[in-house]
Amino acid sequence: MMNHRLKGFRKPPTDHYTRPYFNYLEDKMWSHNVQCIGADVQHQHWLRYAREFVEAYHPSTPRFGLLHHCAYSHDDINLIGLMDDDFTAWLRSMSEDGLLDDTVLIVMADHGHRFAQLRATHQGQVEERLPFYSFTLPKALRDTENGAKMYQNLLMNKNRLSTPFDIHQTLHDIIQFPEDLTSEQDVSARSISLLRPIPASRNCDRAGIAPHWCTCLDWKDTMTTDDDRKLSNEIAEAIVQSFNEQLKDELKICSPLKLKGIEYAKKLTPKDDLIKYAGVKDNDGFVPDLSGSTQMTHAHYQIKLSTTPGRGVYEVTVLFDFVSRHLTLDLASVSHVSRYGDDPHCIIDRNYFLATYCVCYDKI
Image (cartoon, rainbow, N blue to C red; front, side, top):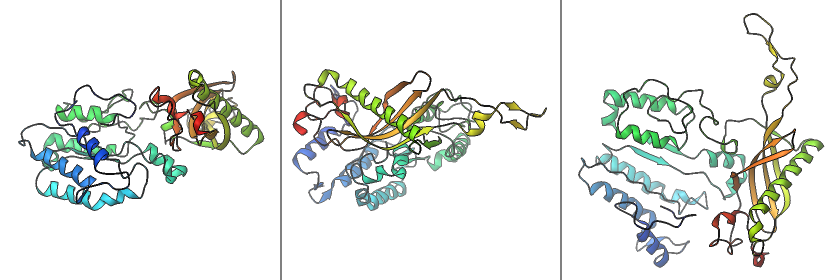
């Protein structure tokens, strides 16, 4: 477990806790450029530990393991290939030796690249929101009546909207099989099982995914006309002002920010037919009447902007009310897509959450 923004645990939270081991190795035995332990590369120890954990217990003993590795992939998209062969060999040997015969195996990422050059592309933006996620059921389970239904549901659900929150309910279903494996689940629930049918009607809003993180939406460029550019700039200035509001109690050590530039701005808009829809022209309800003139009262904007001083680049989604000219900003919908570096060093121990916005005066 990482202690990224939290203070850690008073006591080890699991029966086997690797943090002290890897902390020691990071402090004593490798630098960020050389990640070897003796003759072995770090990830080989990580994979060996995973195998030994499975082998240490009798097959009838229930066990759960969570292993998280980001040393290669976090900062550079190219380095992850260093462990491809070893990871493939590990998966093959675990399978051939029967160690996965009674195991549900999940291989996943928590997010795509957030700082690599790829993140500056549309592909990188999509990958940040749609990280790799695979789910494997053992053959022994698939060969049972319930397991066969679960497997078919899993195959169907790969083309339905799912989120990492769904792992929670899925694990519940593994611990205790549900009686009903055929009925569609309630889309209003934030976590629903991947082993039961997910309705095709599930959308980002129902799944608890904010527009900032949703990839199922249509966005329109708002930098093509003078009016659009003016409004986009107004929104960007308001966003930076919101950042400064977060820093208001720390301005003795953190510099206020100013808008440096806008890389892009886009607006989430409904389809033209939806805006123009006024009813139907025929008795059967098949021919739409598109003579309507509905006016939009609010819209989501997504803006990528840079600030000064420092090198901050942010991707922000806001809700803008055209009537009141009011801006609603959810700070959870702010992606800091550039490296902080050491710019916020003065605030880290005081309030880590402000590191996203803080540029210490001695770094200007």
